[in-house]
Image 1 (cartoon, rainbow over the protein chains, first blue to last red):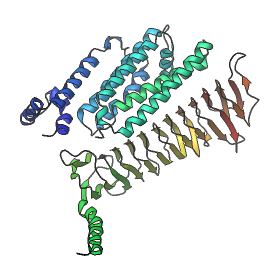
Image 2 (image 1 turned 45 degrees about the vertical axis):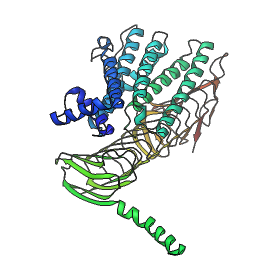
Image 3 (image 1 turned 90 degrees about the horizontal axis):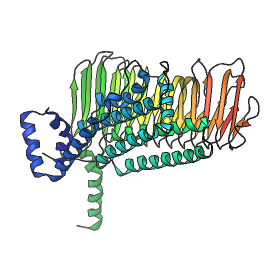
Image 4 (image 1 turned 90 degrees about the vertical axis):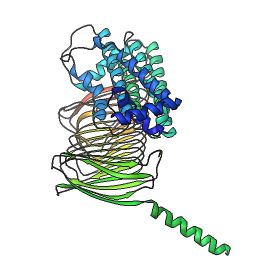
Amino acid sequence: MSCEHVRSRLDDHLDGKLGSRESEEVRRHLAECSGCRAELAALEELRRRVEGLPVALAPSRDLWPGIAARLARPAAASAARSPWPAWSRWLGAAAAAVVCAAVITGYLLSRTESKPVQTATQAGRDVGAAFASASGEPHYRQAREQLLAALAVRRDSLSPQTLAVVSDSLRLLDDTIVRISGALEKHPGDSHLDRLLASAYRQELELLQRATRLPRES
Amino acid sequence: MSKTLLALITATAALVVPAWAQSPVHETRSLAPDGTVAIENLDGSVQVTGWSQGEVEVTGTLSKEAERLEVTGDVHRLKIRVVLKPGTRMTTDSDLEVHVPAACRVEVECVSASIAVAELRGQVELESVSGDVSVTGTPGELEVEAVSGTITVEAAPNKASLESVSGDIEVARAGGSLEASSVSGAVRILGGTLEGGEVSTTSGEIRLEADLGGRDSLSVESMSGGVVLVVPAGVNAEFELSTFSGSISSQLGPKPERSSDFAPGEELSFSAGSGGPHVDVSSFSGSVQLLTR
């Protein structure tokens, strides 16, 4: 059994979904291969981190249903149909969970009054605005760090070209965030800048979320 | 053996090997008119064309690294996958040509393979990392994701979502609500009618030449890329344009004003004609142009 095959089956291995024969082959391979053991350990660690997310802070489903839908939908849809190794799908779903939890947390902490149900687009903007507030930014940073960690785990499965595109884009977005933040320091309370900053945060998290669920390239 | 003969043999071998290396495929399966076809291929190309028959036909060639073409599922959902030989990493091209019932749902996922779909009427979901994606005809719904590949759509349906990272997005004819976003790629909507939606980039240019219709708001946002809107001279819409440090030029409405005494940006809000959809254009440092045609 090759390393690539074993790594594509690690998620099912952890879930106990492999048949007895395949499960035994995976176990034998893991006993002899330190690289695949490291991969397994990374996956287990990622699962632990995601399981530790503040699920209790998620709002009830009748509160702004667009929030979860907007941020979770792409990854969930992909997980349902993705043909790629199971654990890469799991990473995508995990990343989406991280983003959702952090976004919702950030939103709840900065929310001061009840608002009616709005469209998903508007909800996304307002959640982003929560990020732009002082109380929301730590949650953006937390989500960003978690997604970067998830991306680091699977960086070997992406081609150098794809990694370069993702890195360049992240750098561009980071630079944009720094520039808008700098402008906001000079012009505090500028609602236009608030909105742009929120949008840049959202774009960065969405890019990271996408990057963690790209198909395996190598 | 003379050098000339040796060179001839070598050249001939170089020509012949690829032909041996690729193997043709031909598979046919029944599929319900509203069934789903999911296709996976790493490298090469996938071309999907709708037809009136109630079956799926796959033809093409597999690369030398491909072990087989796997077709699984039933009349409601078929999965077509190029299975690589064990231990294979990157591959040479496998090219698939797939005919499907025109109204069925189609899902295609590739890495560097290009995707081209045509004459489909159902829901279409396409994802490629570095391959280009092109859509001809008007699917019922359309969702496309790419990273560095370009996305080209001939006629977007009423509901379409197009996302890229560094690749450009070009829609020849918009057909309703549209979400299009890219980080550094350009977004160009060259015709048709936009009825609300969101178009955004970070540094890519945005050019919208579609008519503005419907009642839903259209949001256009760029951080450092320029935005150009080209609208009919008699357009009916509510415009709200703003930029923090860029400039605004408009062939409609009053002159742009400084947004504040302390900030370098400009803003411009006005109602054109009898009013209509709200068009919100926002940028950080990119210029904003509103032109008439």
